[in-house]
Image (cartoon, rainbow, N blue to C red; front, side, top):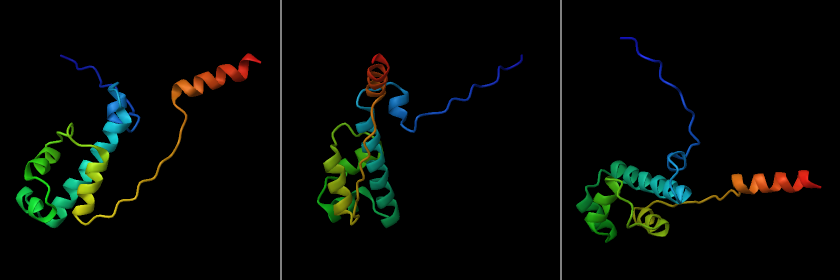
Amino acid sequence: MKRKPLETVTGSGNIFRDLGMRDANLLQLKALLAAQVIRALNEYGLTVRQAEARTKIAAADFSRIRNANLDRFTVDRLLMILNRLGWEVDVTLKRRPRKADKQASARHSTAG
């Protein structure tokens, strides 16, 4: 049996957007921040209990982050957790027109 070659698809850099999920940018940001929390725990060699003692944040929350269960977390809470772990976080924002904005702009510029 011959196998059909796999199709290669280039992603946008945001898996949540590629999957068509609502609030894709927010989900991506939370995932990136959670990954840094996990990185901090690993770098410091902290268990969730040790992280709780160090930050006064429930061990269950660190377990949720490790398991990528981020529904209960806001961006500011994840930033606060990183801060309590001793990380200084800088956030940079870039404004890019959305696809719908680009299409509307193109329609207006060609309509005249």
